[in-house]
Image (cartoon, rainbow, N blue to C red):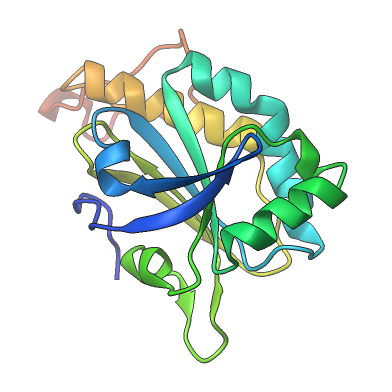
Length: 187
């Protein structure tokens, strides 16, 4: 079932960020754009390549006013240990949410029940706490931070320009569409 257009559900959890353990809740997310980036587990294979890609592009997300939250069902302690031992994960400055209870993972409907692991899911939440974008891939398919940046730019553009939509492969500054009866059958 799609959760696009639904409200971010309440959560509170421990996280690891920039050498510290912090508490993060849904209240901390409200009022800004956010990316929730779920992955199956710390100390794995595809996951560190994706998280490193996000780390390498984190400044671009920040420039757009977007906060990034990586989420797995591991604890914040595990996140710290991984951060301290992996060169790829050691680059991360964004918040790594621990979700050992599975609350956040279930809120976003990406829990692999019976395994206790999250699917590889990406969600973009707007400042009102509404989920605007979701992407779920299989275990072996890594995601691309540059494509995610493009999608966030498109979501931000249409939020700021009601009545316009971004066509396929839209890049910032390119022409958008204004859906109307006149466009039907002409694209």
